[in-house]
Length: 141
Image (tube, rainbow, N blue to C red):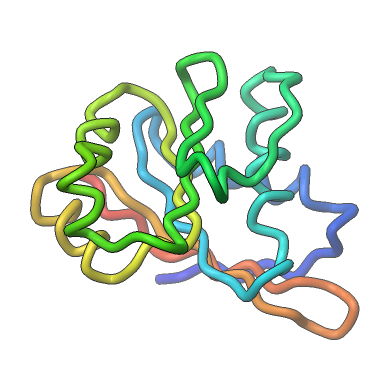
């Protein structure tokens, strides 16, 4: 059953701590939300939970940012599953660690679930002056 948390962007570290405690050490985490909803902010808070001090920015033009070989951050806004396959980017998911995907489509999620990867989906929605984080059930294989 999905878990729902309402918090301000100032409380995003609490959300990251909860997510890290809920999920295994190898996971592909799909973040869904409108533009400027806080997806990259949440990724930065998760990086801090891993003890990483790197400044996290959206990999909009590079497609992927790697942080200390334990956290991988993707922005797939412009590419679909077939593009990922032709670029070989899907092979990156074989690396141990957390893979955080912004703008990953249903087709990619279905492919990764059917291929046996651990996945989870978090939807971020505006809620008054805060955000609602809906943490879906993880698909753990």
